[in-house]
Image 1 (cartoon, rainbow, N blue to C red):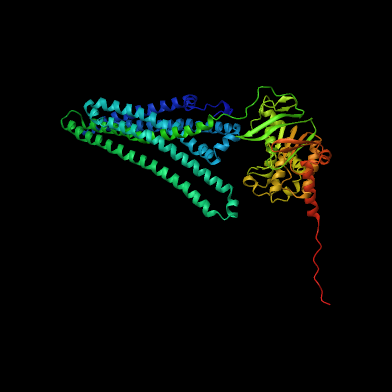
Image 2: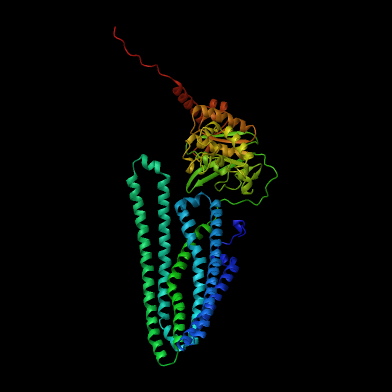
Length: 597
């Protein structure tokens, strides 16, 4: 299969079917050939039985040998038809999964607030499997059943039209049962798959917060919550199973009536001499081939309805509109890194988080954004990197609205080290070199090592059991909070962006490491534009300019010395933190035991 850009893959089921039409046509041709051979086999059985009845051993043996060859040929056609159609189904699954991941990468935070991770995982696995079965195994059975029905009906009509009509007397009842069950199958299948998604999300949340659960001794409460979700899934599954379980026996019972009619009426025709014994055996074999498609109606209907329900759930992701889209302006030849923020306002729902913020930074300069928790600092950082929908005309990069620039240009130019450092479950080296084309190459390793040294995490990485090859575990669980933060900082440094946005890189480090990181930030500021989000005055004072936020608004701006002299909020931060440092370094005299004289 030729790999393409996921954006070129068709998304709709009809479009996917048309895209794989050559494979489906090849599979259909193989199925048609198989059924033609099976019809030939039925006629050969007639000849062999009639010859055997007449004691014509030569004719019977000849017909049997030809029948053997025809049966082998039909088996080969069956195998190749399944391989061909299943390949098409697997290709559909592969492409839709690629489209799904590409679409998820483009969707913004609002989408993920509405659809939890466990629900997404359920759709990316279980629902995609159902779609693959629909366009693979399901389609194979539909087409195969049509050809089998036509082939068997041709043989039966050639033998006896009256017996054929008798055999088909139960067909209308089977059609009505299938139609009646199909609608309910779709509804219950969709409910069942939604219950799977809810259970997946419950398990994922419980595992992600396992430390919190244990620290509060709430294992029993979590088990009770999971039990409720699991019970809901069980009830939905049993409801679906009961429906499917009742459909099969009901259709089998109706088909059995048709079989009994054929035995009774066909036997009468043989006794009356209207058909031969060979005719009856051949008719019976054809009827068996006709019976399977009829019995499979319920089975195929279940596959089709599960596939439809699965695709309906996937469409919610495929049709979701990205909040952040690439701009129409071509990428500039070079980016200097000058940032201008003009009257930036942003809200989460009805709550205004950033309100009329404005500031400018020349290329190669540094700016600290200081404020209390919840003042909007991190929101500004994410808007600068266009991780959330930045209002048009409010953020300029080298004088160009970042909403007009290609997303690739903005993301490549603005390196963002988040406060909540996310690490992948792979090695330290691969986490730091995540943005490199080949993080395992010797040249890349030197870049990774240099970035680790710059982020003051090199010595600690080397002390790990396997050094840079140490697997950090899910979300970096094997590392401390400070180590995770510095590995994330090193990852941002590897990209060598023109603008480096650091979101509180000192929140989980000790005093010694803090000083080393601050020195590294100063070195970075000499080579690129640096925006430092922090609540630490010790970090802010090293920047060329400082902006102070309070409730999403800029209330002070200037250098460290200017703001301290102004006696505002920043000055109170400086005073409080200086007092904390003095208290931390103060050593109380050790108490002396009183001696008895």
